[in-house]
Length: 558
Image (cartoon, rainbow, N blue to C red; front, top):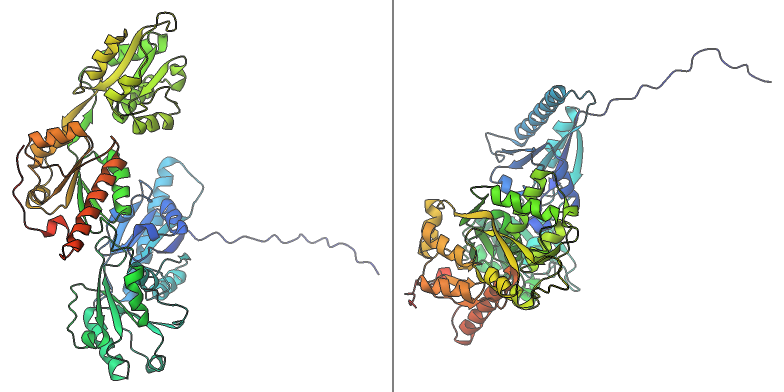
């Protein structure tokens, strides 16, 4: 039996519109920015608004955030501000962001609606000892979509950074007690288990007393770690009994305490706090846009870098000479162009952009770079240098490798040198001796920066910084000029002999000189000095300290 087709219209399914907003609860890890997950950084890169707990700074996340993203903080949950009220504030912030986004789209004539993303930063892992449940529930009730991005928990990371494995072949059970938690008597039956506590020093002492009172061995070792996974991490080894009696002094609001036989492995596995530059405060007198690699490299070795700009890079007072030289470059006036710094590359690149030119204008032109960093800047622009010094990375080293003018091989005998207004004449005179005609053009000016704030100047003079890294003679002169001489206790490292001589001429003792003119070599020189200093202290039976912890000594003038 067949059925006749229906003549009624087929109902169409009406799709539900996507929620106007999404809140991603992002685990930020325990403190070390390097422990942020890939997904967490991707969420931050997409977020319209980033919301963090009070105490966090935008600088903590700015390297991943969109330039136009808004950063906000919410107060910590207290009696007057419960987790529910914090959750409501988060929802209100999200709803406000939706309205703001709609207004922006209307101004731009955009009719298509897009979802607003709010990144809610949560310390550690959102699912462990956080207000995730309350905040997510309130958000869902308000019709807001949610996402949870797991993070690295302090329970796991801080003991690892302290050199304490919480679970081993013999210790397989791990018990965690968070802030405000209570000791479970059932944990006390397993003497081989590891207990990890997070709380105030008073809470940790109370938990330790409860464990001792319930039968745990008072001699059991305990590691008390504060500011875990950061350059300020500190670990004290004590016993359960001493902590219970309050004799272990800890000056921090929060402690991660690891209790168990596994603490004995710290002597072998401690890696974070034993790095040569751990907890060193290093002054880097460079412009912020140039200091990034040094800051990162110092961080990898345990130090905290503080950038104090000593120069400001500005265009030449008159653009006429530079414009004329660029025109000559395009029309084939030059055989060579020599870049003596990254700033010179930037100056020429900016001039090219302003004139609507691109790298094709370099066709047929030979390119020289004074060193590896300058060569890298050229490669980022799409240019491969023909000449980089094989030896010393300097103008003198470049000159040693620069071929003399040959009227048979070289159709043109002119060289374009875009440089700073205070550059030395070594390269110019040397090229002229080799038969080249040189257009020595000021491409940019280096101007002494404004003095740093008073607290920074005081820190430089009173020895708060453990070391200062000088990467040029101008940074020495300018730092002394705008902030004064570093304290006699501060370790001074110079990028090369010329910079070291400038420092000595100004009455500074130079403790180390880099083997080559690169920022990596400067940091290597500081690391070697710090390592040797620590080894000497151990050999002499003295505690290993940082320079800032020592009394200032009179610095000999040379």
